[in-house]
Amino acid sequence: MQVKVLGSSGSEVPGHNSPAFLIEDFLLLDAGTVSLCLNTEAQWNISHIFITHAHLDHIKAIPFLVDNMVSSAKPSQVTIFSGRDVIADLKRNIFNNRIWPDFTVIPDAQNPVMRYQEISTRGCLDIRGFKIRASRVNHSVPAYGYIVENALSHCLVYTGDTGPTERIWKRMKGRRIKGLIVEVSFPDEMRDLALASGHLTPALLRDEIRKMPVLPETIYITHLKPHYKVTIQDQLDRIPGVSIELLQDGMVLTI
Ligand SMILES: [Zn+2]
Ligand SMILES: [Zn+2]
Image (cartoon, rainbow, N blue to C red; front, side, top):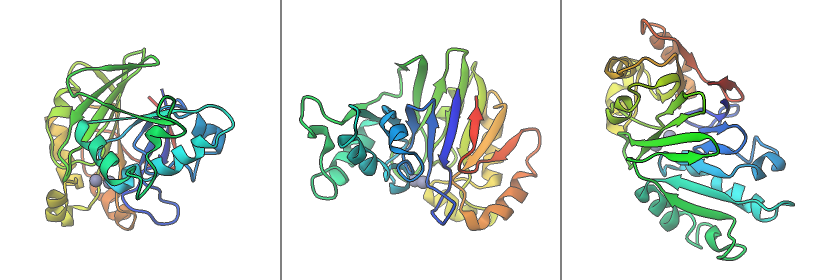
């Protein structure tokens, strides 16, 4: 599978976008950045968005995307997938006809431009040849990571924002993990803040790697604070035995 990194930053400054990963042109993991880096044709092709959690840096492109879709030259429709608690936050706090219109009834309720679909952490969704499994992770709000498996049984694991966690690592067992996109937001010196806010540092990631039943072929780092990039890179370089790569916006991964 091809994964285009639309954004992979833990905060926004010029050249650093909020997290969004586009798989094969139609499936998006998180939606921090879409409309500023894809032309309208490419936006209209997005039909499935899996949201890890409702923090603004992971959802803020959805309002502009669906607004563009309503006025698109070709019929477009997108479904937002996440846990019941995350979907409830989107309904209550964003698409509430105050902050932004309720696009599940636009242009009309029978054929809306946007739908929600609540997901379970037990099952597996089949979407155009991909199997997608959700797993709880440990953040300051309800949050889910995703395992995306293609027809060749190659898996991409995306944690979204998380502190030290367990379940998603266990679900990697027996699978071929070609890539893991995991967050490292802060340098080791900010361990207390990382733990309090549900994030990882390089040393905390090293502890997480020890919990994994299988090692990913490559570990891709997302969500770091841009001003700590050099320090975080230096600290990640000291983790032995794994291939670790910092993501950059615009990269295309082949999983
Ligand atoms: Zn968050
Ligand atoms: Zn975040």
